[in-house]
Image (cartoon, rainbow, N blue to C red; front, side, top):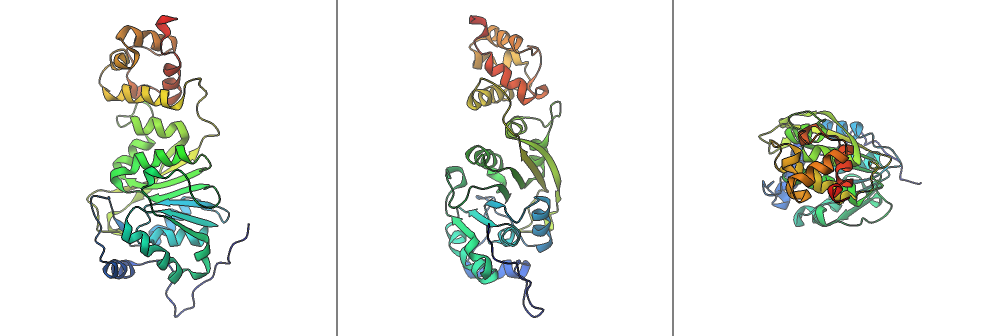
Length: 298
């Protein structure tokens, strides 16, 4: 796979990555103010984006998809390291400006960059080769649904590193029995092995958010948990179990199964105690429960 050689800027030239002054100049020129509505917090520290790329283990042959590139801080660092980068941006002004930023700061790599101007939740295909990695500073207000949508839609994504609100990072990486283990934890684990991969301070963003941020690493499983149930069927059980997480599964799954007795039959057939709660179950156990729906009628 061919790619343009990486070059080092001369001593009197600025590096290609964006610093605080660059970010503010770009934003001013575009009339952009980060909005809470879209969860926008722009990274203004070049060392942080280098660290993200390094932690993501971005390789020279990777095809990276980035969601929410904003003004291009992370995009430029990814483009230096990967073979190709496709950025998905919903904001009209930011989407229009990003190709020019890439062309100005990394002209020898501009042909390895593609922009998709769409809502990431509606993206069903991407231009060029299939993505092998997802690396993104995800908008906090839609981080989990966007992450799950991308993992489901693009099964070729092997490695993912996302920056999210610290609390969300904890939930995604939580294991059974943890107080913060819930729907995001189980659904993410359907696709991948998930772990926390570091913390990010508030001062590397503009504007500085009121919350801390965390990195989450997801390495895709060779295959989802073995089950005759569909992903949709398994996820329906997960949603039902955590909708009333304080209740026993016998009670919490009554609506899903049709009655408490039917829920108990499915649980028993799956080898799960009807008195257990959702926060104690693995994704494999949820899959087994989905398989045994209707066990009482059999």
